Length: 245
Image (tube, rainbow, N blue to C red; front, side, top):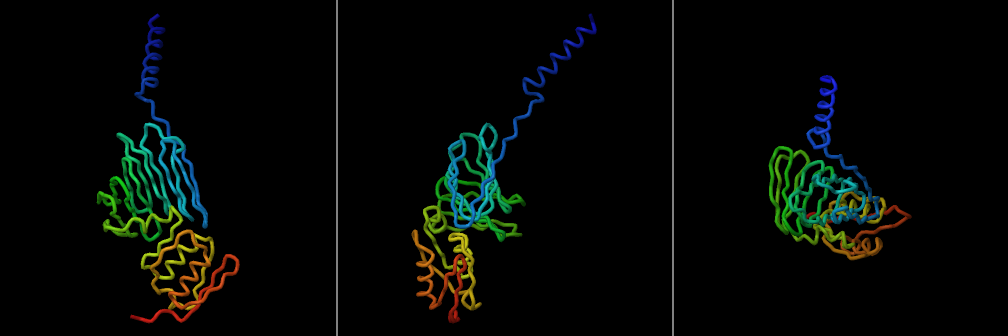
């Protein structure tokens, strides 16, 4: 009888520990990975209502179902987030350089091998890097973290220039032709070749709304006195280059 009582007590003790939570662990959220190829943009809606616009040539992983655990996503490339407000849990975005925590806001994250830029449209976000440095962004502020850097740089910006892509608006913000072609290759799914190295450093500062590749390049031709040919998905650019200032 004593032996039977012991086993009954032990069984009840183990039942209480496992069923009432002493040993029970929260289930691990199943992750879903989505990729946007060159020339493609994707709209994603998470189970909590958060909306994500994924830019071309980008990849994101996120939990299929948002539960009591903190929602965390990982991004390579660029995405615009419109996060559903959560009363007590932050929404976390990881890139290779930085972690961004929010409680409900709209912001853009651009993650590239050379660094990450976070641009805040609405609300407030906390940006942190591996060495523990953090900064809080308010609307119209942008945080940039360069690869290998131990600091977060912030500046006030015209946010539309950084988030306009989600509405099919191309902004070239005083960047070189070489940098512009990186954007063009992703946007139109083409491969660019600039024949004259002097052309690559010519500065582009322009805006295009729902324009074709040919119209964008014709605008470049007018600004830079250059020529171009389109052969399938290959674009070749030639010209004298820009005079040194």
